[in-house]
Picture 1 (cartoon, helix red, strand yellow):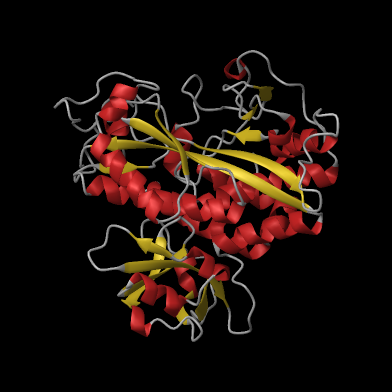
Picture 2 (picture 1 turned 30 degrees about the vertical axis):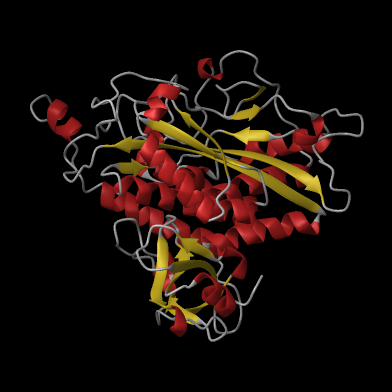
Length: 444
């Protein structure tokens, strides 16, 4: 990688966005003139950026934050520098890692949590590979939160009124928007594999090419921002809410994951004869045993749990099966070298760093503990019991009680994450919904 000042000069960069992904996956940081950005001198932000909730509040749990509200140092990851394609001035973005004054990494940084999990794999001589798939809705601009979301008007002058799974014509209704998304992604080295129309009205899915988990988490983080920006320029909103419309399917972030041997470069999920290996089954078993405890990282908002209902294109349990889309854990048809597990539990509203870290952590625990999975499901997993946490509050309690997962992700991170999410649950409990007024006002 070239020195950043040389890269800025080569690309005529005037401004720099110094970015840190927070707990929610929001881009925090600073914007400054390029000539004032000195990576070697470092930038500073308050540690509390990782404790800010989605509502802009901060948790009351004093254990979650240093009492002096100290600063942290930002260190540029030179591999992440990209040109921001939608700004009027030539602008670069750089994702940063965070450190304390003594040089220790900030454990509650989502990027560091993923690095920590990947470090455990590396110690075993393993290298994970992932491929995220992100679903989202395009909707009309909605400036009044009391009104439900609606599909936008396409080039035909009409809004989508029915479900158009995999429809090319329905995709072409928004061709100018997708052309911009493709162009923006190409400019930022976000490697899109496919774009499809999903089940919901104006619901889309973008699949990313498989690769190294930290790089793919960076791409997924930037992709969500890119799609929202592109939609705004076409007078639409793009939303990654887990369940934005009550009568439509929710939006997922499916994570395909496999593990390679660092020395040989071969998949540890397959034997020399091409059959599934014991490590492959142990990885599935780890997902089955621990994903419930990791649920708050895959479904991080109170709205997330509205998606996970029976017969709505989302899993309700941690059954696994071969080419079975009703199961929470699907093994797609593939050659031995590409054998993988698709985690279908995570929502599109999840922080990509944390969802990938949690999913890989669960598989890792299965591999290191030598676990064995249950039998694969050949029929509909929707006919089996619901065994995932049904609320964010319940999921947070599961994470707190799971010592192996807390140790792997970092106790400091889990303490901070739970404090942030408990604060959000508390804020939600102050809201009275229209459903409550409709059915309870005069009947109870």
